[in-house]
Amino acid sequence: MLEKHCINQKNATVFALIGELGSGKTTFVQRFARACGIKQTITSPTFVLLKQYGNIIHIDAYRLKNSKELEDLGYYELLKDPENVIFIEWADRISDILPENCIKLYFKHGENENERKISFD
Image (cartoon, rainbow, N blue to C red):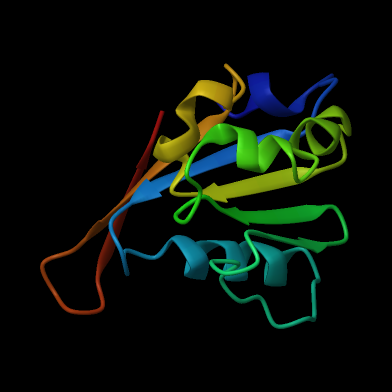
């Protein structure tokens, strides 16, 4: 499944992170960035909307009123770079501008306090 998103691609890889508050979206991005060698502290971009760590872009769409606000931040330019990996928290709020081939990850709370369930399509 991931092969079709990553091989011979002409645009950024986009992960659409969908799930309720506290379900692990930011933690997922933190772990991914750490695995890629990012040493900076990764925090949720809730109030600044977009943070960039090299070619890893972390977007939080929770506070956006509409997709145009993300477009104004240079979203389409970021999408053009095939080396970018873009994570969009609350991606369901801007589904009208998500790339067709984005990887949708769904986050849910598990039965135990520190348990999370992640599925994708």
